[in-house]
Image 1 (cartoon, rainbow, N blue to C red):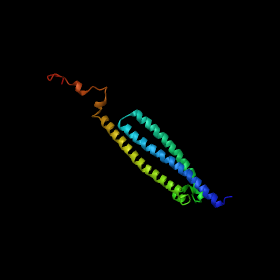
Image 2: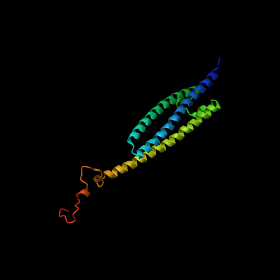
Image 3: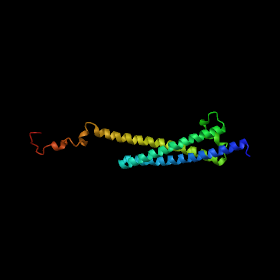
Image 4: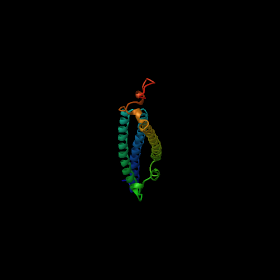
Length: 173
């Protein structure tokens, strides 16, 4: 029969393994999302509306999956914090776990945390780039819709060049 301390150690190890699996899935999802954001930016620059729609849907699905995994991470983290005996189990930090699990598992958890943080920084930069690209596109739209440029895009108004007479002595000019 297992002592209470051994049972607790096994619980911590099992929950930490489950947490590492969740973090691994989150890491993979962030990698996929990063590529989708690159694809979105390329589609936006090419004005490929079909591709934009496709990548936006894919990004939405990835975000949904990330939210689901994050919910699971929160549940397992709180369980782990409770087993460890934290005053506020939901405030679990991986540093609280690393010393209590086998070294390989602890190193894996830290590596996953670092990778996810790196993805977060990269995704923030990629989102910023997307914002700049969209802003740049709107500046072009604004230029074309400004009063002086409206004649260039409106088909229902006559083109001023077509109203010019070919006869230099035309009195209507």
